[in-house]
Length: 326
Image (cartoon, rainbow, N blue to C red; front, side, top):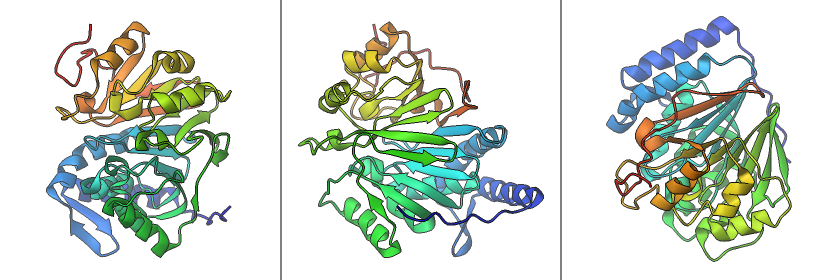
């Protein structure tokens, strides 16, 4: 286990001044990096407006609250978690999203990461991780013991090796602390033929509130989690594989029994996510749904008792194929 670096403490007024400066620069289309103040890409600049709004939401949270940001990075996954001066990411979007995620972290005033969980080697989950890990110090990378021969994967591994970031391949039952929160790994329990099923799945607990983050885990991995004996129930379920019908089986949804579900996907994506079968299940189970394709970045903030959101749940029940679920 790596030794955690001691974080520098700064006066509150200085922190506020720095935050305001970063927000103003971001709104003007600039980012602060190792090379000074530089223009950011049009895509990142356009996203800065949404980032600014979410940063304000985060700043209004009470000290000690846990905030989970389901970042709108199009077709892919990226979650940013903060609790006091602790921060971590779960995935970082596709290859062209690294700068966007970098900008988001900078807007939130994040300078280093406790963890980077890279759920599996698919590009829409780890493509932006090389940029993020290059720009930010990170205490530990958690990733499945499953490699890939893609350039995307090799780029990420190269940065990890160059910066000598400790890497762990967790197994079900492994538990990690994250500030005053903790998370337990639920999957993968073995190496699967399907890359999606090799996704790291975690159950995050803060006080009496719980979040289940599933990567792209599909029904085969869900069956193994159901038979593992590990707790699966959660208040919030980040749906597996962007709401695909290959994930969120009836038995798995029943075991998790979420109040809320979050779907991360792009508007008009070519895969038709989320699928009608999944939306019908959620609707029948009375689960409230948030969607990045309809609502942009979603944030959930908890004091350990109550979870509050930056938006109201979606009411369309629209599928990715452009149909309303039945």
